[in-house]
Amino acid sequence: MYDTIIIGAGPAGLTSALYLLRANKKVLMLEAKSYGGQILNANKVENYPGIMSISGYDFATNLYNQVKNLGADIKYETVLKISDDKKVITDKNEYQSSTIIIATGASNRKLNLPNETKFIGKGISYCATCDGNFFKEKTVAVIGGGNTALEDALYLSNLAHKVYLIHRRSEFRGEDKNLEELKTKSNVEFILNSNIVSLNGQEYLESIMLKDNEETMQELKIDGLFIAIGRIPENEIFNNVVDLDDNGYIIAHDDVYTKTAGIFVAGDARLKPLRQLTTAVGDGSLASLAVLKELKKSK
Image (cartoon, rainbow, N blue to C red):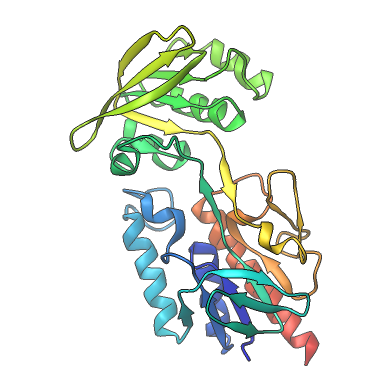
């Protein structure tokens, strides 16, 4: 029996494991795909305190190796559910623990167009605050209609030479305050009632093709595309032990505590105002502390 089971080996889960292993706890990590989570897609990370510049792959690999060297038991299995008695059931095994940390993250909703994966980190980004600095004085586009898209466009308007804000409808869902501020920006151009139908370039993204409601095609030459059409958490399998909001994010109190004693949440899987690498590792630290308190209490 493990002291804790961590579901997900992204920055939040790996940080939780790091702290718990250093406290001499027996830790099992379960990951369905690959360690590192979304940060693996980042070509460069330059907004993490104390590190001038590092690739997302190197950051994740360093953290993974740090945890592995401390003795974490890491298994690549898909979690199917958590039973009411805190048994974690995967596609291969069942595991029992008195504490569980859910750190499954949330995946960026994609356009699902050819070349999208190819251009990630080579012109395509899902995080303006992470990657906007790479596009100073360049031409970029943001696609989306919610607050994230509006906030991304505002952020980029202070960096880029030109910002196109593309939305498939005629009206935005984001806050009016952000929209009105964007309208004052001379370097922001709105393109409404339009969808991106192709992503073009050789090694790097060079242009996008748009189609409007009249079936008119338009090509935009851009250096970067920021996709802000939402994120998808995969928490439905945990709904017997946690509360979910309308978008599927886990509702927590005091940052990491769920409705079930001994079950905690860390990182992008939870309802929170900001999803960044720094907040993920911060959650991981808090979740490990909560686990230590729970283990001490149950002795």
